[in-house]
Image (cartoon, rainbow, N blue to C red):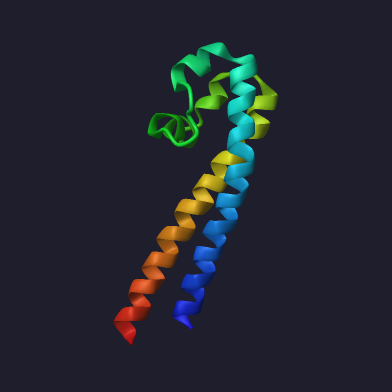
Length: 101
């Protein structure tokens, strides 16, 4: 049963990755089109750059008074947190499941 929950956690991480692949590029296009200062900060091709992902995780978008940016970046951040939590919980449950068998 524990391994089932581990697989379910990994499935949740995959669902988060799907949402991330939808919202993060939309956020980056919005930033590119309307916020040149943030574009310069994140750099070109920021999809998987650690600095850009850290900017998203620490809510760097909240310092910009643009509700559209927050509306795109917040779901991207939540989906990134779902990915991280799903992988961490799935890995932990897998380790526990292997230790018990």
